[in-house]
Image (cartoon, rainbow, N blue to C red):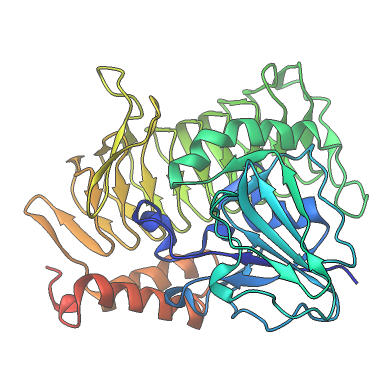
Length: 430
């Protein structure tokens, strides 16, 4: 049996709220997979759940696990407790998960705790890996003495824009390490040899599942990075795909340019997309620019929706938070959009903007740099989005893809609506 993996998340900084109000960090996409899937593959363990704050109780999603409470012991297979924000380099092998407990540091910060089978948790749940520096991390001792510490290289996701910053390198590394094989060694993809109607500019491999439809007028530009197209992907020309690039299963490119991005499953994309992450089940089926952006699930971007990812003065992009304004440290940063957001035609989104989960942008033109969750935005300003109207729209959208919201997700969304707008918020939508 493989050891268990429990992803650990403390209450994140307010900067994370735009995406983590409805989902744990462990469920976010970076490179070719979710954070959870990445740590599973790297460590050789199997995710048994996410230790997240109570507001996310009931969350469950494929590739991410479900929220659970901290166990009293390591169980029969042993448990690796891992901070969701710690991303070890793929070429760094994991330390051996042996018969003794062990602490793992990534870039000098407390990232992991290994407990062998049957061992009781030697610390309080609040002292599980929390990203503190080595000097500030809690002292951990087991019954058999001092717990050894393994130091690894890697990066930390300290804000949602960290995913945008680190994704190009992680995506390129993922694709360079891919050989067309699944975790069990079974071939899943083959090197695409081309079609008379498609043009390939090589330099890196182009990997395609056998069930991929590449139409006439498509350019596959792999000069700067590999391209991977998963099962059911469809690319309609004229279109240009530039690596490093990953398109998740059943995603459809309806034309345009898609470059250096991680696109989650069952998405429709069109226009100009670059250096972005779409978690999946998203719809950007029309023209418009999306650059250096992070887009949640079940987002619909209306025709002509465009974001800025560069200030006119080329200064670093600032991000508006509920309690302060912070400097991202990035010269290029687009928008960060929560789950179930919808924008109207002609929506213009400024650099570093955050669009809270469940919001409806029912107006064109430039929107505010920060839109709280469940906002109904019109030319008259921002009101609360009625919960019953939101749920009706959500169910209708998901039904178009033959999906239903789970009871756990419904509870999370209702809790968030009440937290933001109170008991009377559902009566305020025009």
